[in-house]
Image: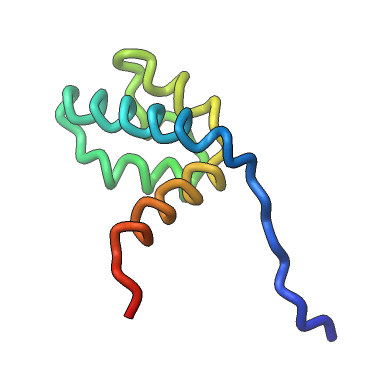
Length: 85
């Protein structure tokens, strides 16, 4: 039995680009009256880009980024905002 933890390394230089894409998709979803959290979670869980509106090219933008990259950036933002206990 192997007890080692698998490590995933994602190119750190893409973080700013991915954050920008997330922000733009979020804004497009809001403009169209969707709940951005529900739509983004639906997309992340299913991989189905139809959860994301095509308004302002949001669907095209989101599909340029791997879902695991999106999750990494979201977790970084969340954990950076929380003080260590």
